Amino acid sequence: MKKYFFLFLFSSVIGINAQPDKKVEDGLFKVNALLPGVSYELGLAETSTLNFEAIIGFAINGGSDRDTEFGIYPGLQAEYRNYVNMDRRLRKNKNISGNSGNYISFLNQFQFGTPLIGDLEFTSDYFYNVAAVYGIQRTRPKGFYWGVSFGPAIFIDNFSTDPGILVDARLGWVIGGRKK
Image 1: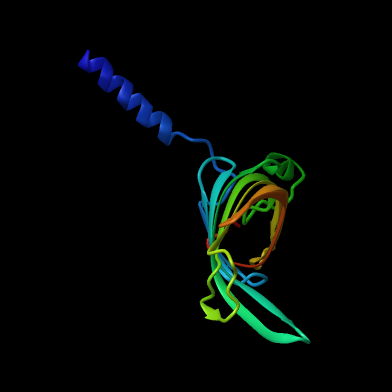
Image 2 (image 1 turned 120 degrees about the horizontal axis):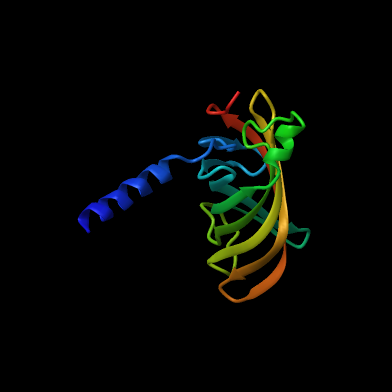
C-alpha cells in the first residue's frame, strides 16, 4: 500500500511541475502615475494572474462659503485576473508582452477614510469595493502601459452597502521583467 501511495505522490508532483508554457509574465512590477502607486502582477497559470496594488488617493472639498479641505488617503487592491484573448492575439501576431490582453477579474479595493496628510476626514473610517470587471491592459515595448476596467460592484463603508458600476483606469510604466 505504501508503494502505491508514494507512486501516486510522485506522479502528482510531476504533474504539477509539468505545466504548459505560460502566456502571462511570471511577475511584473508596475509604477502607476494616474493614481500614484505601485503594483505587482504575479503569473499563476497559463493565463491567470494575481495583481496586488498599493495606491495613494487624493480628495479636495471646498467652496466660496467654506474653507477648503484636502486629504491624501492610502489604499490597497487585490485582484484575480484571467486573460481571455491571449491565443487570439498570438494568432494575429499581436503583442502579449507585459500581459497585453483583455481579462475578466474579481477585484477587491480597500481605502482608509482618515487622511495621512490633510484635514478632510470622511464620515466613514474605511471604504471597500468588490467587483466583477472586464479589463483591457496594453504594454508598449519601452514599458509604458495603460489599462481600464469596469463592471458591476458593491460599495461598502461604515454606514451603507450600495450597488453600482466600478470604473478603474491605470497609466504608468512596467519596470523590468517583461518577455521580449
